[in-house]
Image (tube, rainbow, N blue to C red; front, side, top):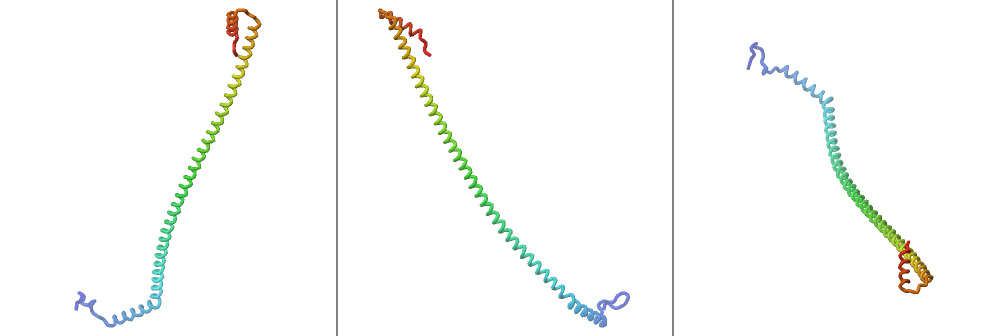
Length: 172
């Protein structure tokens, strides 16, 4: 046996009385803990474990739902992009159609105005020709009257007189 310097009992010495009292105290504390504390501690650990498992399951479910929502959102965005492209295309086609119709109407209006102007020009030209013919006719009649009134016997003198009259006459 190992002894201390003081010569007293060593730590490795077994004292039966102390051992039995320690054993009795341990058994009493063990039964008290088993009866009053062990079940609530195990129940709370089980509840905690169940809660953690449920939280993990809920997190996994939320994760899958978020993934599903993300894919649904992407699908909705793709549909929206397609719809936007379709609307833009239709608007462009409508605008092109409206521009073509406006050009066609402008061309028709231009053709109508040109035709009306040509008709008016032709009518004014014809009226001017009729007026010139009338004036020439009245001048010819006037010259003929003057020639007949003069009663010249000489043909050369008559032609000279007609020339002088035509030079003196001004056309308006």
